[in-house]
Length: 192
Image (tube, rainbow, N blue to C red; front, side, top):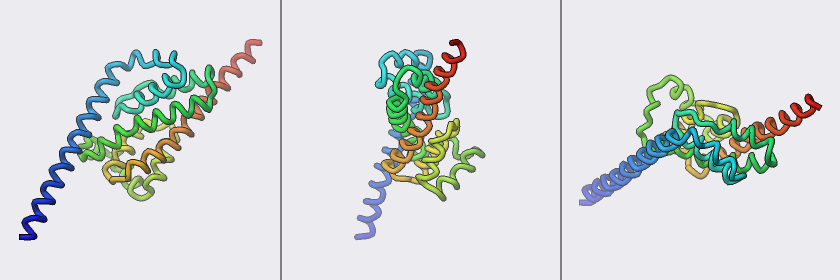
């Protein structure tokens, strides 16, 4: 009798996990389609200052495997606003946006699981965990979505994923914001 009860509990638990995974996959696909549809208007958010920068980074990083203009806006905004504020706004938005890749992996329905690049990232994520997330999110890397998917597949706790992704995003966004600030200074000196 106890064995039957345990089987029913496991079956119910698996059912709810599968529902959660399906909802995560639907959310990721929906977000990606929406953001890809508005990609031409993303730069309009920059007129709203730091909240606009946050939204641009959030939207640019929420797409899974589709490019969106994020760091270019951060570079440009670094010349207009305080680079530290730009880095904080963009880094926070970027880290939250990367949850879409994580959720795609967590759902267990990742399309990229049979690709060579995924198979290169997965052992790295499995071996180094959140430290790999920090390094991969700190460098300009068009394949970070795949690293996020691998993090979701390996079930790295979402809080730890977010923290280390946020630190990496702060580093990357600060580099772009300061590059934007210094490039404008350099151009002004050239024309004086």
